[in-house]
Length: 141
View 1 (cartoon, rainbow, N blue to C red):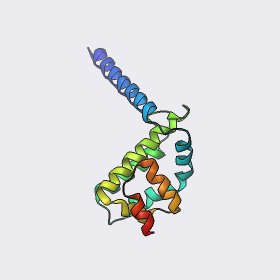
View 2: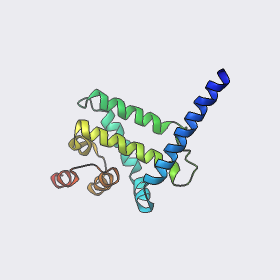
View 3: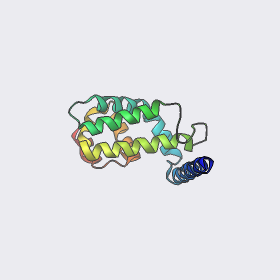
View 4: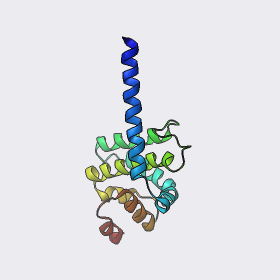
């Protein structure tokens, strides 16, 4: 009886992981977008740290950012990084979803204010993560 339950749980986890893998293959960043995302990585890490430390942001936003940084720091990923292209795509997708949630709660201005890189880098980040109102914030800087 216990073996049946354990096998069912294992099969469910495997099916969920395979569904996630297929979804990541479908929505993964393509060629140049993935390379662009990798160039933005140092600025992105600093952005996440700055946003997480900002006491003016809602606590839920800071908790999400802390969990995201912990996930990125862990050596275990949903999709192992040694798999070509999709190994890093899961990290990029999770970062994009988290940044979109931050923008919904805290606003694009908070993200723009903490961005440590260039205006072109922020424009690239906004394009990669599909953040809204990027033209307004770029013009104001």
